[in-house]
Image 1 (tube, rainbow, N blue to C red):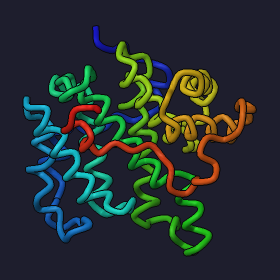
Image 2: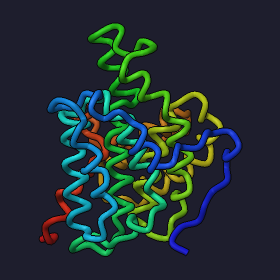
Image 3: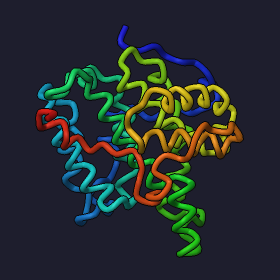
Image 4: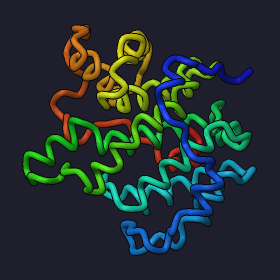
Length: 248
């Protein structure tokens, strides 16, 4: 077993559509990306399932440029994120990353967490203060945030994954998803995972997400807030590019 599935809340969150249906039924050409239409996205998304991990992480990096350039949520971001969440259980997600003893699944989850952070209560709330109406019903970001219960069900099975990198990336994504009011019932058990990240993680942006979740949920996180002086720009980040080079 490479991961264990959690059934907590399984009857409450809706299932994602199959990734094949998302790919085939989305009108990618009509959706805006950072560089025009999403006509290239089907090819990029399909490359995430290639057996070559370098092809996979390069495709994930390209995907980030198209649908999350400059930390922006575009029309094409939502279906792309749904596709990535939908392939977390695919055998290709278990490909080992170049130069790292870790599956590509960890990178996929890290990318999801990074994109979710850009639509988090903290970031979206700050932008709403500057640009009233940013989060109004029907806006691109509001529609993206509405997907959080569905995405949570795809991420939750990996909270107890056998690989540490996958577990941590899943926890960070789940903490951000659980900001949605419909997921409030999961916050008590997620707080346990958040404390573990604070105790064991060496990556301060992830520790900051965990710390802020505990604070928001009334759990009195220990110590000062990690990276508190660089709050607006610090969040989980993984576009795969770092996996193309050996760690020096």
